Structures are given as structure tokens and as C-alpha cells.
Length: 198
Image (tube, rainbow, N blue to C red; front, top):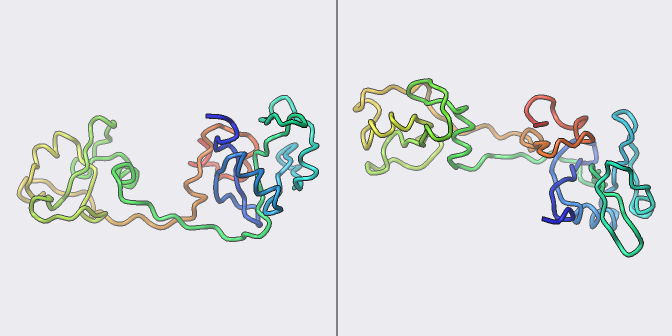
């Protein structure tokens, strides 16, 4: 994938709260229409918002991402500040096996054992064959051997007991879910130290 379409730009709202990650193509588009400014990060305590006309003339430093254009290299902003948007959107996780794993923290909800990815399945507490819905409240992470033993029975019928009743995960600000997958230093002041920087 070309760097122009790679998600390497952290997006901040007008109050400088992290709300999204985008590509240089989107960042340049927003800067060119004055919907956002690039943040020239010199050090953690020295950051200057720069508009598009001035951004195009910033020098490209050794560690900067850059894009080649007909008029030369242009530095890719690592952080973008929106001009008008001031909200922090909320995120409600969609129901899928990955998010059930996250909700249940990789722990079998019958045995309490931490599971490796190849050791677990998603179990319908009330089996689908008996009308059990695929819902947050009816699906849990289960050790594969336990799930096979349970088969199409209820936990009570299989002699199993849930550690806790499953529930719908809380709706949280999107900032909680942002990850610094590329370990970009300029993002670190804007992302929570625990859980969103790695």
C-alpha cells in the first residue's frame, strides 16, 4: 500500500482530543480546504498548527514521512487538528467473535482459564438449535473442549456454571480504541498511556 493511503495521521478535534486515524490523502484534502491544520511537532511541548499554504513549504526532516510532488517533497503531517469539529464520537462495539474475546478478556467463562486463540470458541449459552439468539447476552468465550462437551445443552444440563452473566459492552469514546500501531512518537502526547499506544 502506498504511503498516501496508509493510516498514519492522528486526527484531533478542535480541542486537541484524539478522535480518529486517517491517511495522508485525507489529511492533505482537509488541509487544502481549510477543514484542518497540520500539527508541526518539534518536541512534546512545542507543537504549532500550520495551514496548508505554509505546510507545503516546511522542510522535510530525516525521520518524516513525505510525498513526492511535481514541486518537490511535501512532509506528511503525523497529527491533524480539525478546525470546526469539537466532539468526541462514541463507539459501541459490534457483536463479533473478536469483540466477545475482548469483552471476556480471553478467559473461558466456564472455567476461568486464560485461553490462547486456538483454544477458544464462542458459545451460545442457550444453544441456537434451541432458539438461543446470537446476542451479547447469550454469547460467551469458552474453552473449545468445554464448548464441545456442552454441545447443544444449556450450562445447567452440561453441569457448567458461568463465571458471570454476559452483557453488552459499554459505549466508550473512540479515543479509547485508538492504537499507535506504527509507534509514531508525535501521537504519544494525545493517546492514553495504557492501552492506546501499542
